[in-house]
Image (cartoon, rainbow, N blue to C red):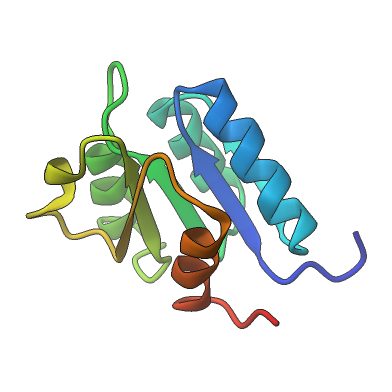
Length: 120
């Protein structure tokens, strides 16, 4: 990929979600990295530059809230962090930049991404 629209990190403990979201965003022109848990995601955040981060909220060990707290308390404070969850009430009082309920459709994904990144 020569000129990706933006670089995106997806953090989720469900391989199906990682694969599906990675494929959709790659087809849209994004450069995509994935992590199977919050700790792996934080390691990637430490070593790469991202324009957008998607994270599941409820994962074993560290949660998506932990990822958000880490991003906001470090150098990368301005990166939009989008929560994903099959339990939407977990995001009600959170400070995520956006929320997308699981399962989601392509249009829902596009609408959320368009809030933060210029796409056609």
